[in-house]
Each structure stands twice: as structure tokens, then as C-alpha cells.
Length: 181
Image 1 (cartoon, one colour):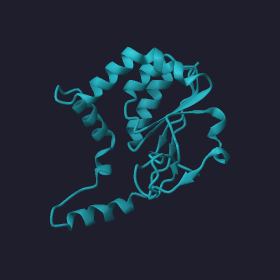
Image 2: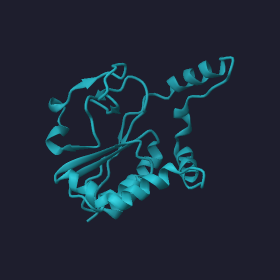
Image 3: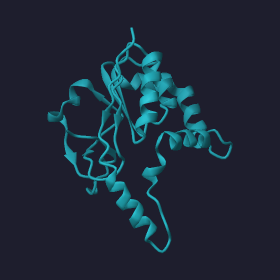
Image 4: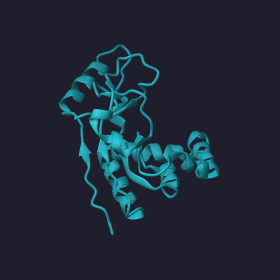
């Protein structure tokens, strides 16, 4: 049975991006914000870069995941919600999904179209898993989940269990961004 995938889109109005481009191009050393590189084509290019011999992090992470997936999965328990920030193609996560009993999976990425393709692909590969993709920018005034982690019990999904701070807080546990309604 195939799950219906509903993408939640928290992208701001793109008019603000024009201001970012103008600001960057008016600097003595011209710049463009990296967020502009992560459309569908930019995500495909990044995936191609990760396949290059010079780019070892992806292969190293995948090798660790392949070698230790059983141990990693044992730490999760059951009825957890897996949240992945900057999910991209969810390649490494697919290895983990095959070993978990999850309440759901929330891939979060800036590239709306690429995220949609990934979520649909995942829903076909894992028809019993609830997949809840969130298209969200990795910048701006998004809220930050203090002590956030990739996995949380399903009861903690409710806002009443969360402790949010804005990104400017200097808190060692405030490294994961999440979107609050």
C-alpha cells in the first residue's frame, strides 16, 4: 500500500532572495548566497560531486553506516520519528530505514523539487513508512530546537514538548533547525 506524500512548504517569498543577490553583487568581491545553488539542478550537481574520488566524506559516512547500521539501529528503539536536516537524496538514510521500526520520517531540505522526488521515491521503497517531507530554508529566523536530535519519540512531535530558541542563541545544543508553526 503506497502512502500519500504531502510536502509541507515553508519557503519564504522569493522576492527577498533578489535583495540577497543585489547585496552580494554590490560587494567589492561579488558573492551569491549558497541557498540559491540548491534548486533541483543544484542538488543533482551536489550528488554528482559526492561521487567524485576527491570527495570522500559521503563514501566514508556510507561505509560507516553499512558497517554499523545494526548497532546504530539498536540505539533508536521503536516508535520514533526520524528527522533529517539537509536530507538531499536521503542516500545514507535509506540504509538506516531498512533496519528501523519508525513512527515516521521527516526529510527536511531547501530544494523543494528534489525533496519531492526523494520523498516519492522513498514512499515507493518503504510503503508502510509515513514520510512527511518539509521544504524549508536553512537560513533566516527559523526556530532552533534545543537539544534536538535526528530521532525523537513520537510523543515529542507536539509543540508543547519543545523548547525553542532563535538561531542567534549561543547554545551548544541549538545546532538543529526546525520549523515551528
